[in-house]
Image (cartoon, rainbow, N blue to C red; front, side, top):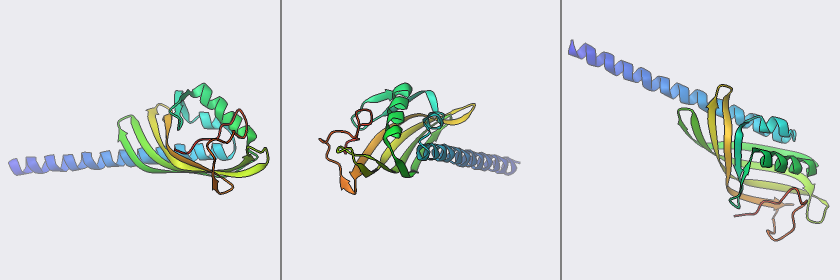
Length: 179
């Protein structure tokens, strides 16, 4: 009888482990879908769709360490979208997931290539590459971005590193500094 009981306990534990792994796999797929929505919104320069992926208390921490609330992030991204003449590419690639219940921290590589006026007000090709630390929460609407933090970023203009001392392309769209 004891062997049967231990066998049933082992099978139950295996079943729970498989179930937990399935939940995490589903969560990863759902989080990846949010990244898909973010990249589509950025390619379309659609600030409303972009901010719809975040919680009302969304925050964005830039490379200088300044934290922007949802309203400030909306204004900043909206201003940047307005000066971009085109968005050639946006990719966000999750590298690691730490999912604990209804919260998740994801480290993601990103690349964004756009055309917009440079410090000389002429059109230039800009590309930003880096790493973000993104915090997600699971809500009744599904996984949503609660915050994003720039961990590493470098920006190129026409394939060359940006001069951090150069003035930004517009007063509303600051050039992000290389750290």
